[in-house]
Picture 1 (cartoon, rainbow, N blue to C red):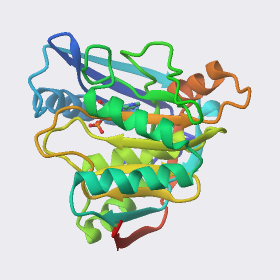
Picture 2 (cartoon, rainbow, N blue to C red):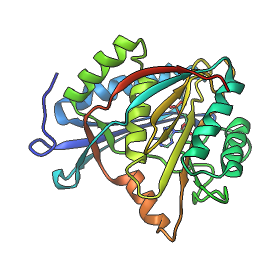
Picture 3 (cartoon, rainbow, N blue to C red):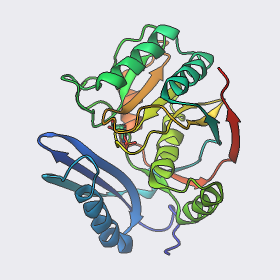
Picture 4 (tube, protein in one colour):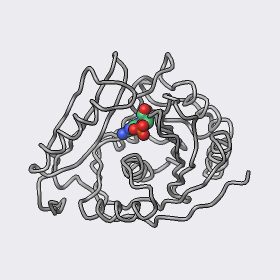
Length: 272
Ligand code: AMP
């Protein structure tokens, strides 16, 4: 494995986006040094071609050099798990965490309903996330089919190895958890974002999470029924006069390299 320092080696952003029948199928975001790009690009093409929702009919890879001065470093949120009996209990538990984080009950409910019916116009999956006013529940993202795509973030090789080892000990070392932790770390850096809600659009993966600045990354063992292809993400923003353009610019463009992992562990059983 290559050891690099964001400050001393040229870092590239590698992004993959795959579509099937014109809709979003799969996406991925990595940061890497030059020697790693070929292997990573091949792995991302393989991933797009093996997606459980279908076979890609277009795959776009984008590679861009980043200036080392713009790469900031950060830490993953702490992770814990709430074990729930089924997806309905999971959504009730997730709702409580969202409300505790400062999201209005109405906004949290509307976001869940949007994810359940497919948040893109016409009911499909969005490529990115909904950006939601935490009080009114209004959708703020400029393009509701695309959403806001969080990009240009990854783990350093050392943090990745440590994370894999620790997640492995908990029996949850998979790409869903690793990538979602990194994404949530970036989302939680945005001033005004009080929570994120996610469940996957992968029909075989029913675990979802709520991430908040105080609770960290909280997994719910079930947030949707098995076989359900609709999923997505919602970022809840306390607007307080904030410049939406700056929020979106940070999420989509500011490079973030995670070099420190958070505390991992702790399972609680949800009793309603
Ligand atoms: P996944 O966890 O990869 O199954 O993604 C579930 C959903 O989350 C996708 O359908 C998108 O709507 C959204 N999503 C995935 N990756 C991102 C990202 N980098 N930024 C924003 N939203 C994303």
